[in-house]
Image (cartoon, rainbow, N blue to C red; front, side, top):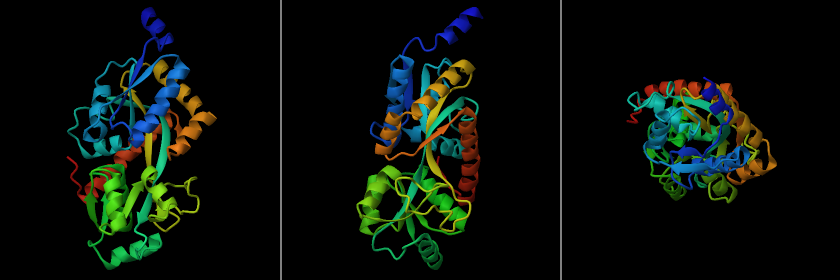
Amino acid sequence: MLVIGQAIAAYPDKPIKMMIGFAPGSATDIVGRIIANDLSNALKQPVVVENRGGAAGTIAADVVAKSAPDGYTILFAQNGLAINVAANPKLPFNGQKDLVPVVGVAATPHILIVNNSSKAKSVADLIDLLKANPGKMSFASSGMGNSDHMAGELFLSSTGLRAIHVPYKGGSPAVTDLIGGQIDFYFAGMPVGLPLYKGDKVRALAVTSKNRFSGAPELPTLQEAGVKGYEMTLWQGVFVPAGTPKEVISTLNSTILKMLETPEVKERFIKAGVQIAPMNTQQFTELYNFDISRWKAVIEKAKIQLN
């Protein structure tokens, strides 16, 4: 017992591996590397990023879920994890028993965009168009089950409307077809959609968060635009394997929360087009569990097959 106590007190005394389930250069990878870099400086130990892409992030999650619960293998994930846990009961790990949410770092809204020539100049216009053309209009996503796909499904579920989902292999081709007129609307990730809106390449109608986005405060939220109860963000945060000592979780949580208060980290988040959103362990756990429950309901209602 004494040895265990001494080991916990010394944490960390060797390098930490941060698993990220997406490719280098992706939005999750960019934010994860910001956290890894500053966490390394704060803890005086290297935090080495390992990208293990595939299966919408669940390959990396599986590795961490089955790792030793000692704080030396951690997961940097986003809300796609909750979506996959909700959609696929056959995952090789239990998303709510084998992984523990430690700290949330970001919660960035999606931005609802349309072609500049679209008749939809507001969310109300888009709803009217969808009502007049049931099941005929289309919306894009960067892939089945991704956050932008579920943002669109939540919009349809919340309004009782129908549209054709067109999945792409990434946000860039989705935007290309939106601009070209092949797609009617897209709940783009902020790093993809905001520069296009700022550059007058597309028209933005709203953001998906509860409050307006600081990077485009002139845009209303979906709730303000009349979609009652709509709220969704692409959150990102740190998880560890179940059984990790509370002292280790506390160290990671407090260290990262302090980092998020520094001007340097805030500036890096702004440059990445990401909305900083510090969440302690309890808050992040509540968000994670709420998302799993919510997406189960949306997926069942829309009869979406993700696996």
